[in-house]
Image 1 (cartoon, rainbow, N blue to C red):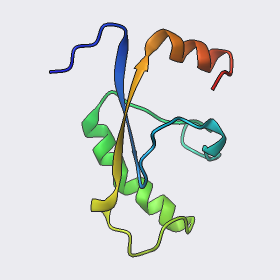
Image 2 (image 1 turned 90 degrees about the vertical axis):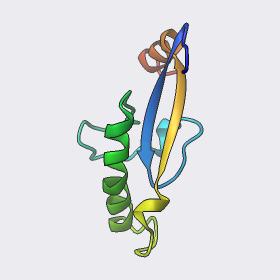
Image 3 (image 1 turned 30 degrees about the horizontal axis):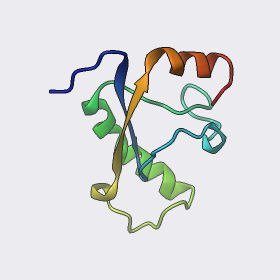
Image 4 (image 1 turned 90 degrees about the horizontal axis):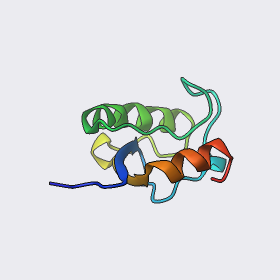
Length: 92
């Protein structure tokens, strides 16, 4: 069991692992606009991985042979207050 005192665990599903959030690599035209999408739901993240792979294939970022099993769930442990501050003031 993970115990958090000043942070939160968030998940990101993709075709690649993400160790650091880099807003300059975010794509425009996403459902809610440009951004790096995270959720506290592991189940929601796992369900998104196939869609991420499908979109990456359409953009020719990965080969057509790329398998759903090769998708990645990245875990981000974020200190809530510093994350909100950095997003609010553009310190990403």
